[in-house]
Structures are given as C-alpha cells and as structure tokens.
Length: 447
Image (cartoon, rainbow, N blue to C red; front, top):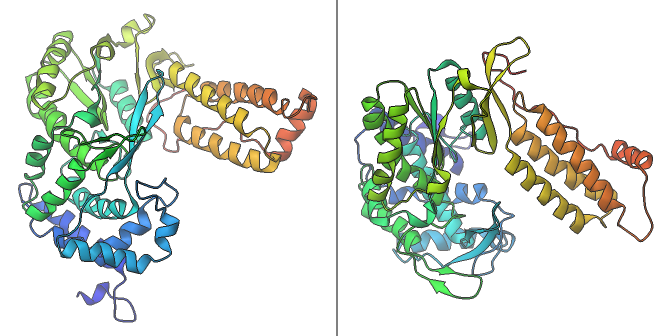
C-alpha cells in the first residue's frame, strides 16, 4: 500500500482505497485508448461494496424481496459480507426487478424497474468501475448521468454554439422505447472493446437477463433492453449510444458534411445542428438506417428538420430540448440572441402535478405543507432557473399561488382565507419566490 494513502492509524479508509483504485483505472483508460481492462471483477471488493452502499438512495422503494434500505442497514456488516461471499464464490444471482409504471406527459406510462437493495449495491460498485473507464472515452457533448454534465451544462453548451456558430437547420430526434430495445449482444460487444474480464461481463449479463415482475404479477424475461431505474442502466445506455451515435456522428457524419455540424446528446435525447439543408436532410435519411442496425427505431412523428436561422427569427422557428424551448430573438439592445424559456408542454405538466399535490396535501399543518412546497419550488427553480427564463418562472409562481389559494380554501366547508390573509400566510411561511439559479454567465447578453 502506498504510505501516502494511509491514515494516521496506518490503515486506509475504504473510500480512500476505492478512490485510489478508480483513479488508477481512469488514468490508464485515458492514457491507453485501446486498452482492454482485466481483473475488474476483483475490484468489486469489500471496500467497493461499502462505498457503494453509502452512495445508493436509501429512500428508494423496496424491490421484490420487500427489504428496504433501513432494514438492510440493521445488519449491514453481515449483509455486505454475504454479498461479497456470493461474488467470490461465484454464487451471486440477480433478483427479479419489480416494475412500476410512471405516467408521462402524453397520458402514456413509462416503466420503472426497482432492483433489490443487494443488487443496487453491486450495480453501484460496477457502475463506478465502468464510469472510471468510459468517462475518458465519452465525447464532450454527451450529457446526462455523468459528473458535472447535467441539463444546465448541456443547454449552456447548445446555446453558446448556436449563438456563435454558423447553423441554419436543426434535426430533433426521438428514439422510440430506447431503454427497452438495447440489443444485449451489441452491448456486450461494445463493452468488450474496453473490458477483457469474463466474470465482469457475466455479472452485467445477469442484470440484463434478470426477470421483471410486473404490477399484475406477470413475470417477463427480457431479451433486449435495460430496466429503467436500475443503477447500472444509465452508464450502459451511455456506452451504447456512444458507439451507436456519438462517435459515428463525429467520424462519419461530420466529416461528410459541407458545412458545420454539431450534436448534443442527453441520455437518449439528442439534437443536431447543421449549416446546410442538404447536410441536415442527408443525416435525417441515414439516421434511421444507422439506428436499425443496432435494434433501435426513430419515433417519426417526433423527428423533424427545423429551419433555425437568425435571419428568419420571426417565422416561429424553434425547437425543444430538455424541457426548454430554444429560439432566436432580439435583445433589448437590438442584438440577435438565442433565447430559452420553459417549454409550454413542461409548464402545463408541472402545473398539473402541482394541482394534484395541493389536492392531496391541503389538510396538512401549514408549517409542514410549506416546507414541502418550498422543497418542490427549489427543485423547479434549480432546473428551470436559467438566464433569460425569469418570465416563465414568474408565470409558474403566479399560477401556483392561485392553485394553492384555491385548495387551501377547501380545507373545510368554510372559506379559510381571502387574498389579503393569504398573502400574510405566504409571508409568514416564506413561500419561495422565483429566482435565476444559473451562476456562470455566458459571453453574451440574454436579457
């Protein structure tokens, strides 16, 4: 052991050992772009499992075994040792994933998989190793489920590039049921480009093939896809689209274009910008063929070519990305600028969800109700509080006030407040007002 990594007691803490190991993997992956890593399975040791336990969401719902994180923690050392023994003895088996359905904007449902706590821990440790390797390979404009690459960073990059680049056309695309249609054989081949460890690959296969318990009690055995909600799924999805889309766009599409071309991807959501219409049309036509090769399909009704030019900014040419509407506009100084605001669809959905929450929580004590309300508002402002979007934030705030007023006045058969009294309540419990949360200013004016 490197003495510099030891504590004063002469022993390194588990998280230090794991971090040192992961940093070593990352350095090697960055230095040797074609290196295939061996002996990764043994990296999932006691220290890695302990660190993984610390990093999983303890408030998440229980899996098929109905064991919550709180119950698992009662005998933590024994349970972690049991997981490690099963891995060392090659007796580890992935449990079934419990599936629940989450309602989407369009009234349809998105399936969400909930693994058991033990599987979450092993998946977290495995994902940490994969991230150490592939973070060195992923392109700069791949966002989502990556360190320091959230939606705000993606929107900022897109805005700056469109503002200063020479682009006139946008291709917005949607992959139909992406997480359900990832081809297992292709995914394994992609992993083998960087991983030369049969046990490590076999471990990932167990999660891909794990049975899924539906809400009606039916068990299905998937032949494609990764369960949304599984800790391992985001990194596997990013690896899949790194090979299917990202490097293909840079090495093939971009080089074949007559003018500038750029791609931004956030998980399975992506948009591409082109200078010339013929380049945009060519990409539009070959994209489906490329995706089909890997078992994926475009949602044609959500895939479009959009004219997007500062010279046609009054023609209502805009597109949506990550819940924001992007369009050309004019600043107060008369300059052409990219403007961003909350998309109308996302605003309506947020207000619908807020109405439902008010209806279900209106009878709580006001102190607790406003504490939960402010937590929700804080999350909303953190996401949508980008420079230039204050008007949309204030619109959301005004409507939520009216909704809250309506439902608090339905706490009993008598009316509880008039507007004057209601404003006093808002002041007393300090309902959070809209604010811009984007800190780093871009190099141009947004106002």
